[in-house]
Length: 340
Image (cartoon, rainbow, N blue to C red):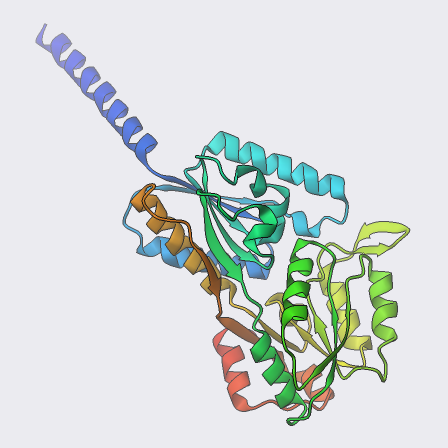
């Protein structure tokens, strides 16, 4: 008899414990990190590094989940829309309190539908467009960090590369949301003493090639914006890997190329000055955690990230007879972006 009562009590205890644990888990805030690109992107990896740095300092129990859309690698619109549908299902199933949405493609294809809703909260990061482009202005559930290209640092780097002489600058980038936002920033900036000669956004690699080849003798430097999502040609919709584009530029462009992404040098480029992905990930997560902890009390904030990273690949830079001060080399080493 006593054994039977004991077994019942143990069973009741286990049921109560499970109910309490279930209730505790349901009460944990849920954060979803929604990346535009895939997990193999070095920029994504550095963003995640910053996110983990902020999460490691956090003491509030919570669920955090990652989803990688991979949209910026798809040259076909149908595939981008399909990736967005999968992302929407992930949000519906996970039911997050807050989504950290990374890069412009995630906003353009997915997150705009959640602006102004009670749930989920949205913290964007690494976007090159203005928040207004996604209807976020006035949306009480949206905050975030705008990616600001380090254009002053790029202007000064070009002066260093030319021993203080002003130069003629061409700009080229993809026509996608990221490329459009970067192009807008470049065209709004005062490049003096340099002169911007042209700004192009070809949708295919063949047109990129002819555009760059036509620059011979007309410009001194080429600013390379986003080169994701390009097709082979107007008649060939196969995607071109960004690394192939970077290798072609470095081998064939007569003007000095300079990339604005962290991955440009990693993919074989000689020189890049890019926003710091790690810092943007950390800042966005700090904002998200503070907002979750404060409930609805934290007002949405549209901030800017002004930190940047220098990348150098020494051999091709030397082949172009470009010598930069040693502080550039040390900055690249500190950011793990220096290559012989």
